[in-house]
Image (tube, rainbow over all chains, first blue to last red; front, side, top):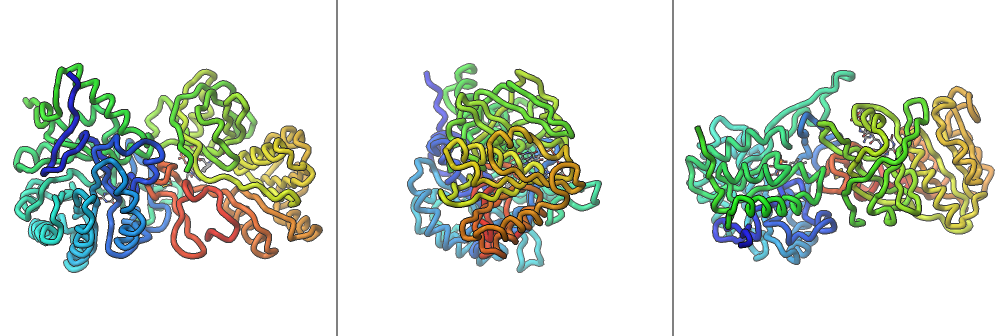
Length: 305
Length: 263
Ligand SMILES: Cc1cc2nc3c(=O)[nH]c(=O)nc-3n(C[C@H](O)[C@H](O)[C@H](O)COP(=O)(O)OP(=O)(O)OC[C@H]3O[C@@H](n4cnc5c(N)ncnc54)[C@H](O)[C@@H]3O)c2cc1C
Ligand SMILES: Cc1cc2nc3c(=O)[nH]c(=O)nc-3n(C[C@H](O)[C@H](O)[C@H](O)COP(=O)(O)O)c2cc1C
Ligand code: FES
């Protein structure tokens, strides 16, 4: 029997569990030249904000051991241009579309999500709650359980389809934040966003990126991500999209075993832009070899000591 | 955007160009036929933990699909590239980015090259000559610190174009910086018939940009930036535009119009 790679999250059906992560695939236009996006379970857009953002000045990325730092600074076209220039392209793609939304005030999240509600082909929203909240002195939305709960519940009021809470690893207890998001009415979790790090040039003594610190991503963070996926899986009941350092089908399988229903590939796309195609092939071969019929047979099946 | 490929290719030729410069040629490069001067490729350094690919301009493409890069050893990645041997395999992603546009038939082509900005311009001049563009209408200004920084001298001369080497220490060609002979040439010629093409260190690009603006000569500059992806998806390689906003050096560039970018 042919293995079935399809998965379902909050009533949305995906052809396979492989998605591309926010900020690592733009709005899909470039990847569509490289491979048919129908090969993806879903595409997750760059974070969209109310107003367009240029982001931080260059240099805003740096290579690190087994990964990278980025402080792009949420550079994006803003909701108006996203609606007029990007949605028409995305609507034509034969894959599920998840729009990632960011903001510096709750009112901004709500306005952007309300606008997106009009577009049926926006299958889901992923809320990037790892943003500093200007109204609360710059503390991240996703670092405070109350703020997390409130932002999700307010967005749920204006967006009628499923909402994913993208959790930050930079918190004392990710499970506590996950529970707050669940309480707020989230339909799924994305676990994890980037860690925080820095790097310094020892010749000039200068930090390597203009923002001085940035998000650490890539294979370096995979063990952290796996642990956090499993911690959330053990304590909460919502489906999880696993993210962090995925470079191969083997990595995907680890995430599924830890409790993820689907995964997102981010930084690794920078080295191999058609990686999702390879992963899908390898994943099928693995399932055949292990005589598995569906992805369900892997989810959360990690054997622990 | 041209659809790039990412495939393994064999190193078929390596030449030590002295002074830490190397030429390496790979075969087969799946997308050889799609390459144009100005395009670049992303090389995955084999047998290491180096995370990102390294961007390199295409220096030549042969009719049977060989692709050549010429590079300077500046860090870990380029050192490892220089240590590769014949029959080593390297994964090549490309062709990427924008390419140089062709001059009009009656135009005089002013090439301003320096350092590792030289390879794409040699490729450009070679293709122009191949396409029957008169070699005597090509003026190749090539600047370096010293004699050993001027690479592939005989190869350039063979093209039959006008070659103006310039070195800071005067060990080869005219002594000084390229700017002076370039401005002299411009002043001796009908400015409306000139078109500039430049690639090199930031100082040289800035000078070429200023010269173009000052004399109202159109032209193109090929830029560099740190490039995590090279295909336009990470937004890590931006430059500021004169009209405001950003452009991605890997996608809208690396070739930009004179006056387009804040340098
Ligand atoms: C479109 C494009 C075309 C290029 N073409 C050529 C070419 O034909 N020949 C050639 O020799 N080089 C070329 N380069 C530059 C080349 O990519 C870098 O020299 C190389 O990536 C350095 O790798 P490394 O691991 O040796 O150095 P690293 O150890 O990564 O860095 C060493 C030093 O080089 C600097 N550096 C690293 N990457 C870049 C970069 N992309 N641009 C400028 N400085 C950098 C670092 O800041 C550091 O000071 C090109 C760059 C771009 C963006
Ligand atoms: C250059 C870059 C830009 C990113 N931009 C965003 C973003 O706009 N919104 C967001 O929620 N996550 C963003 N991320 C985080 C990724 O979506 C992902 O959570 C993280 O990179 C971990 O996965 P990876 O290790 O596979 O890259 C970005 C990551 C990178 C590398
Ligand atoms: S290098 Fe990634 S967008 Fe240019």
